[in-house]
Image 1 (tube, helix red, strand yellow):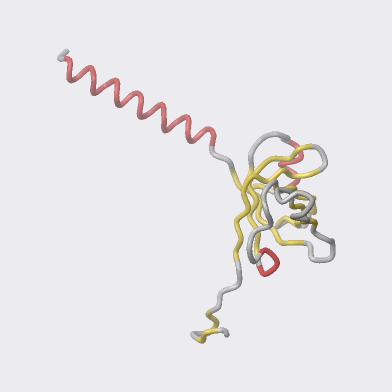
Image 2: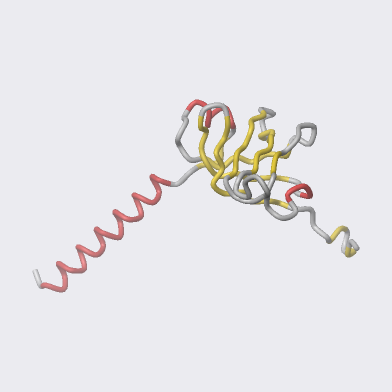
Length: 127
């Protein structure tokens, strides 16, 4: 075989290996029950803020500690701890997606994604 053919085969094998390893490490959308059954494994969990329970954020005490209670799409509630400041417009969000893993009695989020209400309703702009 020519050198170029061997190099091309090696590059293809490396690309396939990279794709397979990325697919195996991809986190999945689940609920708190699955995350509780597999602590330490990263999951995306979709839910809503439990507005009946108090959230905690005190920037004077620790600007990188924010906790709240979230209810997943199957109705299970869990405390969520996020080691960053409270996201802007957090209280206005309709849905919350948290990325992280279950650690003991709470979910450790390393990322919070918010779905805020649209300012456009029925082709009219909300003020």
